[in-house]
Length: 112
Image (tube, rainbow, N blue to C red; front, top):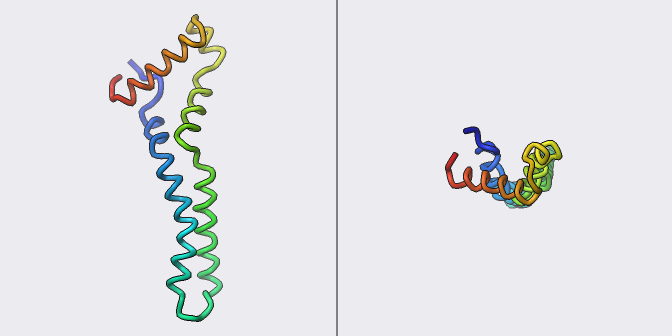
C-alpha cells in the first residue's frame, strides 16, 4: 500500500529546524570569525569582505526562508486536505484529518 505522505517529506520536516538554526548561526558567526582572523590591525581586504558579506547574507536569508517543523506540517496538511479529497473520502472533516494523521503517525513510526 502506498503511503499517504512520502517518508522524505517527514524527514525534511524533521531536520528543517536544525538546518534553520545552523544557517542563522552561520550568518552571525561567519563575520565574527572573519573579524577575529583578520585582527592583525589592518583592514579586511575588500574582496574578502565581499565574500564574507555574501556568505553571511545567504546564511541569514536561508535561515529566515527555511520553515519550522510546525510550518512544514501545516503546509503539508493544506496540500493534502482539499475539497476533492474531502468529497472522495465521504466523511466529515474531522474523520478525514484523523485518517491523515494516522497515516502520518504510521510513517513516522516506520510502518506502511
